[in-house]
Length: 95
Image (tube, rainbow, N blue to C red; front, side, top):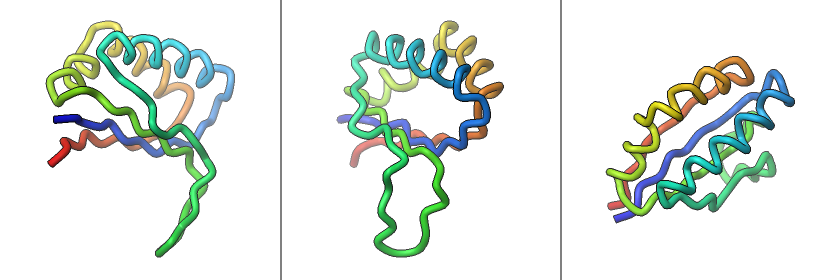
């Protein structure tokens, strides 16, 4: 079953974030990932939306998502993301 990494991101350094995004997307695709959503155009149907960018990455399964997250290549990219943005990330398995 599919698994998702979902994140909310407040970009502090757009140039660094652009570099991070290009490199992390290319890496994630090697683990079978697709990106159903990468947007800041969110409509709050209930509650409120705080303006942070929303990213949903879909992986074929939980093992692929974990392999991406734990890979040495992504560990280096995490440092770049931390320098470029404040973010929250969740790993969500499909039920």
